[in-house]
Image (cartoon, rainbow, N blue to C red; front, side, top):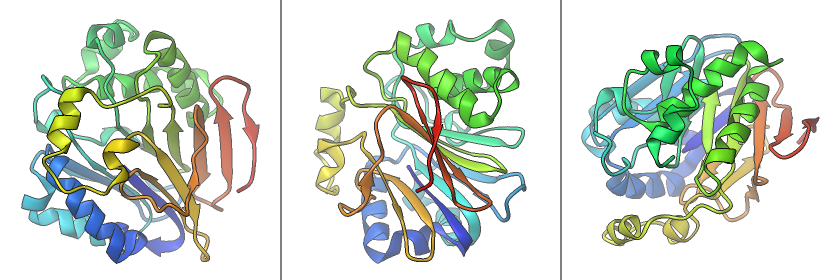
Length: 267
């Protein structure tokens, strides 16, 4: 996962730079089960979404998405959970109204995740992924919370109770915020995943610290957030068990702790 919020306009390609793009294309060899991009031209606008179940490296539209200049954007390369098909309906980011969502993790058993949803939410699912169910729970809670970031934090707390070691790492893009969940301190790749990953030449840290998230603010005020393999060592680790909400209007940051009440900070 990768995302940025720029004070003007940027693109995934410009934000990552030459080294980051090299790493991205390397990761795309393993994460070859579809890709997706969401972007916003100006604060207050509904996100645009482009996604494909094709491997990114085989899809001509992938480079166009990387070069698309927007105020904020996020990217997802999918490495499908075993048993969940490579289909358009299972491809991230998922979209509902003016909110988009992408997730890096596996919530197993999936029936436990499905049981957290209302019958109405279960009936509205279009694909077969636990990630879409995670998003559906957030959507259920939005009308009952003061903000989308608060609903995201409440959903993450609820899911964490049922899945104590799963990765809840996620990104969302709304007309007002880019929202990042980092909750994966006890998560690790399965042995079968490690064997598959070993077949590719990947950035060194990718398998070693797969669920890490880091962030940075550049000199021009752009905020960058990335999974391991795309983030720089000089970037700050995103605090674990937090929801980070980046304002698209002014770049200010609100941090919501998953084990305590929310407190607002500027970073």
